[in-house]
Image 1 (tube, rainbow, N blue to C red):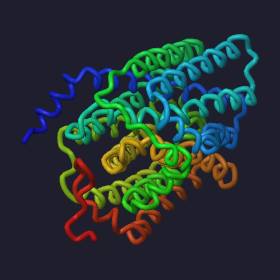
Image 2: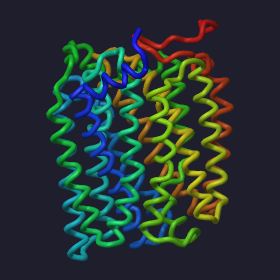
Image 3: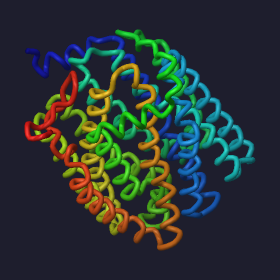
Length: 417
């Protein structure tokens, strides 16, 4: 039986995984830097919470419109090539946004249009990247690889917003230029991956069954519960879209403060991911996910009421810690419980849920802030998250009973049916 130390050593020596990790880090860095720059630029142009919410909606709509196409494409074509093309398109959109900014021609409508282009590319990129990891490492290493891969994302979310905010404060062209370069680097790294095994060919009936991903999730109650719990928790409790307002009008900082606020959740998430890479959840994984969502809701309420920059940073770190526990459980359930020939379509459906929680959550935050005010919108969202956690324990007892996360599948608690 291999130890945790042996598994981590194997991952560090696994060159395709290292390449995957570096490529994913570059992509997340780029996206997080872009989010800070676009958020600050949009609020500077409009001064509107609703405009910030509409930016999130512009990112989300392509993932819904392309959901069925994305899963079909990811299961039929070379996933590395899909990722490479998408990231090059994102780099091109960022270059165009930088050029418009330099010549002073950027408008909210242009930002929305380019965000839609980036959202469409991410609709293909995000779920396809998820399907690559099981083809890069063995099933034995997959749970730790999921946690280690999450550290790549969290590292990008920790440093990307902070660097993006500082660079944007110095010169917007610096932020956009580095963002575009990172997208190009990610396309080279991920597009040239060596796969340990290739996905099996999809028969024609499966290819025509574009609803197969959603149907698969619906049949697996623990998957449906984990994905929908995470979606509703972040949809209600996420306050990322309103951070430019908190940074500017409540905490009275500049773009650098916005960058630090956007980075803070990832500090907690990164520490948790590193811990879970060495100490995976051994027992009661489902129950721990519910506890983490409740903690996320409580921290959201405190953040909404805070007028102290230090307290706001601390609560965001707690939110990131709780969210990472939920992410690792959800991703492990998804990766270990999905047959390889279904990964593209199931990943596309999963990406829609994640997009709903993040981008649609930003739209929800912008709309409720425009109606009720910024602070009430965040506090009510945190309360809603607590209610969702309590409700889902009753709706999805299968998720609550999930015990271990291990290959070749999910090992429910012995009391599960």
